[in-house]
Length: 332
Ligand code: SF4
Ligand code: MG
Image (cartoon, rainbow, N blue to C red; front, side):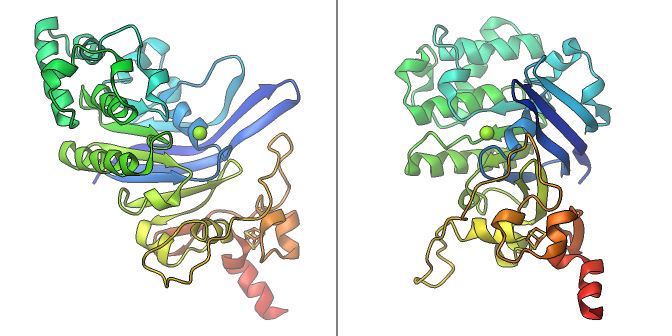
């Protein structure tokens, strides 16, 4: 599989009254054609900011992409004009958000909202676009699509609105779909249905998927690879089964303890990770997880560990696994 998207050393800051918040601090990861990758972490870890940087949807003026490259299909998105980016959004890459009500236009019929993108990007007639809108609603599992297509967002349930958002996002068959907490606002049974739909369409259409979530529990069934973020940095990445079976970073280990697992013994107790993430107005000098880490050592407070490949294709940013540190401890 060829590489579709590569994010390299991305640094994003917000300018606030209190000072510069370093929301994303040197994030790198890539995604291949047709691959499903999850970005996981607590709120405020920089996962949504990373996704919005990819879509070039960060608010200008208060945000600053300080460093880095975002290469999509061999063009650097950060060098594209806004006009060119508008041709990319919806056509080459799409994004869906947690609350479809804020992304859907309440004054426009669902069908017209789907048809809009089709007419803009595929240059087809409104008649053809209307026919395709019905087919798209059918594809995302909305019953009676011929009738539903003429309804307004408020006539749809939460789950159906998210289905309609998926139809809009996939209408022009983009190569990349970014889904930012797409099920967080829905109740549990609907959540599972929406995730299943996303997975099914992603496989059927060959779309690459970046699923952003704070809930590691939703990742196993949906994605092949996981990127774990903490305090604006990637702290671990690897295949889903490796992350679940042998998490290397203490933060990933902590996240796993917060979700119920049917593959473990029934006596498993769910434990939240104590403490809070550091203030990114003034990020700590050493490891960002130091204050919450049960294994913290002296070196962790003063030196930032690099993200290194520890096992086959599994990378972690932690001194516990660093080859140099390991050697040092053996020698001392
Ligand atoms: Fe914990 Fe140190 Fe690893 Fe950070 S580098 S996660 S403080 S052991
Ligand atoms: Mg977010």
